[in-house]
Amino acid sequence: MNVIKKSSKLYQGLFFLLMLSLYFGRFNINIGFSLKPFMIITLAIIVITLKHISFSRLFTFEIFMLVFIFVHSMTALNLRYPGMSIRFIILYLLIIIFYFTGRSMIRKIDIISMETIISKSGFVGIVASLLYYFMGVLASGMNFWGNNINYYGLMIDRSTPRLTGVASHDPNIFVFYVTLYFFFTITHLNNKLNKIGFILTSTAIILTFSRGAYLALGFGLLLIFILAKGLKKKLKVLITSIFALFTLIFAGNKLTINPYNYIISRFSSFSVDGGSGRLTIWSNAINTFLENPIFGIGINSIREYNLENFSRAVYVHNSLLEVLVETGVVGITIYFIFWFLIIKQSFLIMKNNQETKFIFITFIAMFIQMNSLSILYNEAFYFVVLLLYRYSIETYRNRQENLSKGSEGGIFNE
Image (cartoon, rainbow, N blue to C red):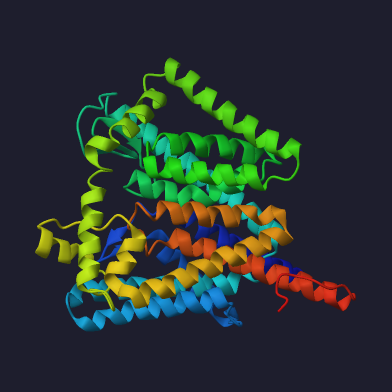
């Protein structure tokens, strides 16, 4: 019994380190690609648990995830930019190793322990990011004039003091990393740690001054309101949102950094900067697709293609357009099937257990964010897919128990 308990504690500790490492992706080593903390932790987990790594039957959404990765990787065969393509095929390989290492481990962790780990690791990550940001504020001397200037977790972008934290060098991508924790805390306000975590995460997200993030998370909050059962829960969501808004305005009037004014400035400048030049980039991407409609231009070729044809070495800043351009109609079709399956699966699980609705809402918010980010290979997304797998097998187990007791139903009925 003690051996089983020790084994469980070991897996919980390793899983905590794995999830915590996602929040510290900024601290990486460039070896042709970014060697991030989660990669090192994954390797350590493999070494420690090698004898106990196991594989089980894949869910349909996992099969299509692998099919898409395979198809996307095979587009490298057009040999347009082989060096760039090979780099990202290696990244996909690392993502697969990360996913299946976590998959083997997460099956051995109970749901309550897993959710505790989500709560604690997210809290540590958010606190670290806020501290790193305020270190930057102090280092800047409160002088935010300039563009593309970095101080620790602060990036001065067109005279706006944007939080990047410890997860990323990009404030928009930082929000992508903390989306899971944000929706977990707001749907699990049943303990003090999550309540504090929600306030801190909201503060951090506000300080990114990310327009796309505001829209994505705002839509997620609207979904929470719609999905809330009963008038009491709907009022709770509404009051929480109104309180957060008034707190933002009140705090802004008292602080040197006025978030409210910066937010208004960011949205009012959209018509001038065209979403930081995204509209022009997207137009070029569509033209590129029309010239290469079936199989696309190849994995991780868009930046070099833009430099060669449009004299700008930039990514598309839209993951869906990126898939369309790099894999053509074939790849985007498989990718949409994959997305349909994970949205469907997370929705069905939510219907079975309302406590899991944060997974469904996180996927929706991430999908919206991906329309303004080039973030196709991000480990935070695949971690949420990993959680979807864990909740899926838990639901399957519960269904099997119900069937053995003579009851019917469950989300896996044909």
